[in-house]
Image 1: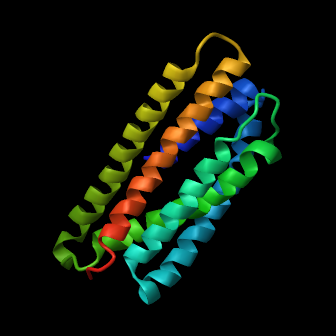
Image 2: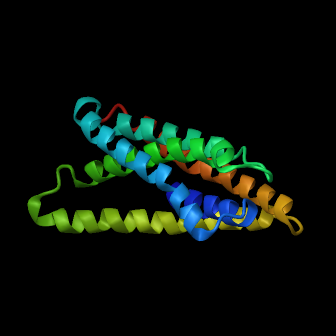
Length: 181
């Protein structure tokens, strides 16, 4: 949920408040993409040692901290001051969460059901993403009072606050199930 919410919110802020072209904004998201790769790689190595739930909890904390950093955006901000740090942390958490979620969804599934399990996992990511974007958009629009960059920045900040709730819920779920195998 948070991945699509963060993507939509950072795009809105980067292009409509900071004035980035779509290409420049897209190049700026390389930080998130690279860190998602790093987070995924690290999670794959850690899952076998510490388990899926602990990796998922760490991923949720990392993604949540990234979203918290993004709430500090400023109408007169810059890419490095307002987006970069949040994208780096969120990306690492996103990659780790995706890897942990995929391992959890496919572990113990008989070979004959692996395709269905994988498809269900992919569908849940897509549905969750659409829901997250819808929630963030609703919050953004409902908190954008008036016109102009100041109003839009306030709406985007509120959207980032809503996006914090998503990894927080994932953290609660991971902690609630930490005792089980």
